[in-house]
Structures are given as C-alpha cells and as structure tokens.
Length: 362
Image 1 (tube, one colour):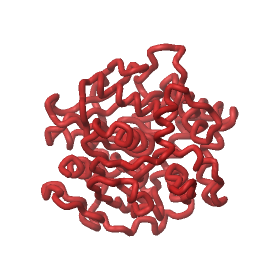
Image 2 (cartoon, rainbow, N blue to C red):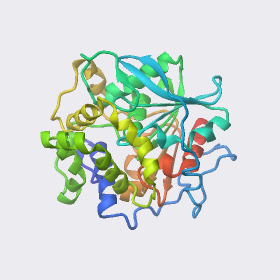
Image 3 (cartoon, rainbow, N blue to C red):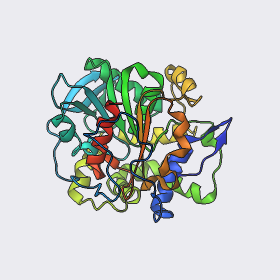
Image 4 (cartoon, one colour):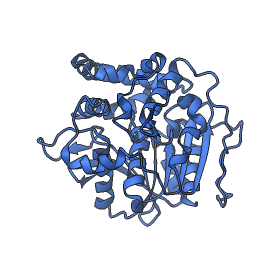
C-alpha cells in the first residue's frame, strides 16, 4: 500500500508495504507488474526448479486440494499452538507462515508439492487463528511483531527443529523476516512475499499522500471501538472483502474462503488483530519483555540469509523489488508473479513452491 517515507536515513518499509497493497486493489491495478518473472536469477540455482517463464500460467494447480488433514497441537511458549505437518520426519524442515486475514489453507496446494520432494513441512496457525490458543487467560493478547516471531521460535524448539527454510506473505512474511534478522542461525533460507516488511514505529507516524492514506482504511477503523465491534460482528464479510480487494483477479469460491474463515472464529482473533494494527500506529503499547527485540528491529536490520523475494500485482509499482533490494545482503533472487494478488502461495502454488526449493539450494 505504497508510498515510501524516508525516516532517519532508511525507508519506511512497513508504510510502503501496507499502502502499496490497497492502492493496487483500488487505483493502480492495471499496469502494476511488468517485470520479468526470472529477474536477478542467482548463480548456481538448481536447473530442476527454474522460475516460471514469462507468459506461463502461474495459477496452474491452484485449488487442486481442499484439505490439510488433521491439525496437531504442541505447547510453544505461551501458546497451545495448532499446526499441520507433511512429509517425512527426517526431511529438510520448511516452515510456512500465513498472513491476515488468511490461515494455513493458503498453502493447501503447496504442501503436497514440497512433501513429494522430501521436505518436512510445518504450517502453524498464528496466535489468534484456528486452534492456537493461549495457555493462560492472564496472558496479554498481544499482536506486536516480535511476540509473533517468538511464538514461531518456540514452535521450532518444541518440534526440535534447529534450522528451517521459511516462507511467508503478509504477517507471515514479516514474521519470517524478523526471525531471519534476529535469529539467522535458525534460518537456512527465506522466501518473502512483498519483500522487507519489518515494522518501523517511527516511520509509521509520518503522514502519507492522501491517496496512499486511503489504503489504510481498515487500520483506522480498527483504531476505534466502533471498528472493534464492527469487526467482531462482521469478520466473515469483512475479511472476504479484504480477499477480493487484495486479489481482484483471483476467482476463489465460497468454499475456499469458508475453509479459511473458520480460523477467524478463534476467541482471541479480534483482540490480536486489533492490537497488531493499533500497535503499528503507536496507539497501543507493546510489552516490556519484547523491548530488546523491538529496539533491534527499529534499526531496520539487514537480512543476511539466502533469500528470494516475490513481488506481485498487489505490490503495485514496488513489484520489481528495487525499493528493498539493499536490505538483503546474502545470496538473493527476486521474482515477479504477474497477474497474482496478495495470497501468492494459494494463487500461484507451483511457482511459490519453486521459490522455496530454489532458496533451499542457494
């Protein structure tokens, strides 16, 4: 949702990301993704998993699967975390993280492809979604970025995974990038849709052009008690609207949306979502135990692990990845999924899977 604000010498990546998306859905959809799908091809990438050729049908395979199977539960930090697991227990771990307002079904067509190649694939419900619940009623329903990242670190520890390949979009892309920035020893490689999304609170205080501010409508809505009530009462239709705006060319059916919408009935969902967006605008405090992590994140740390970033039509003019290229200092590739919206793994499962495999082989 995008316009980029320069604050203290670096770009306000969070403002850029949020604004670019909604502007795509409302004002700049037509001409957004012209870059090559194989841009910046890395040396040594495996020939068996090339980036899609220009003109290829990126939606091939989308909608082939309708079930993730049984959900598993594990104690992970402050959570009883729900997750799905696929592939051999001895395979290279891959952790795939969803965004808002989505759930693990974003990867329903990706996980069979990765499991068939021998990967151990873990797809959790983030806090506030699905079967993931808090162990204590007294725990603050906190949606700030470092708290969510630490949930995933706790999941790795609980499953005895030392190092994984990470992939994500939206909240999931941000969370995976935070883990790569703060705990690079836990990340073998990263696939990040929309690039560098780590939130900078100071940058988010800077005003944007009016057309760009329009893209934040739901965040301003969540800043009000009327918005909390409205989201509580209308989350199904609210989130379906977000899906349509974020991916206007994706003709998902009601059954596809409803499978994910079940995750929004989590008792903590509204509280986590509202706190997340209020915290980003400094309208709600974080918790002191996360200050040390947030202080590091506010410096916009570089990501050193091997990374593939993905731009889509949702990112508008930023789809080429140039705005955040300097934030990735390790082996790197950028790909553009032309014609694809925000939910890249569910809309384009085969090229997203290729990106995971390619990043793993950097």
